[in-house]
Image (tube, rainbow, N blue to C red; front, top):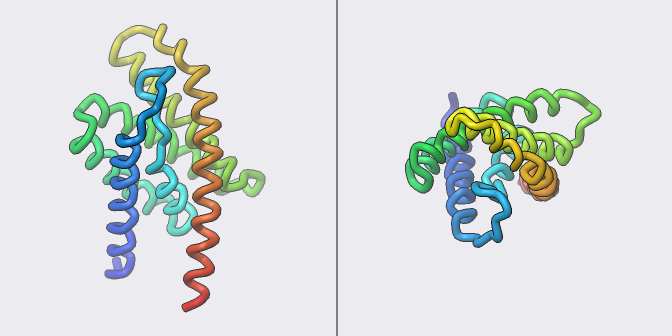
Length: 166
């Protein structure tokens, strides 16, 4: 691995952790426990398109572990890991399909992140009734996934212009 690539991994991982911290500072009127904006996913969508799925996976893993240890504790780490794996898995599959735009891929990632977390929550609390939160979480995943996709798309355009100007 080249030093430039290692540095890029570090920058993306640091930005993802930073976005996770910023998200903690934003007060949200929560309708569902654990509902978040998913700001770190902007960095992961950018990594998926700017680098590749393997890079995005490792950046996501680093973010989940660091944010879990620093801000959330073990339970938060478990939920984040489940959501991140489901999200990145579906985004990787859909990215390869030409019919899905970056925004569509991001929306699917937001939805599947919430599905992964609900599955783990149902297993942890041993009660399927937690799935009643799913409709609200799916709407939240669509809205935040759309916004994250738009931000990632504009960021990648800027990044491409910046690289072309060198």
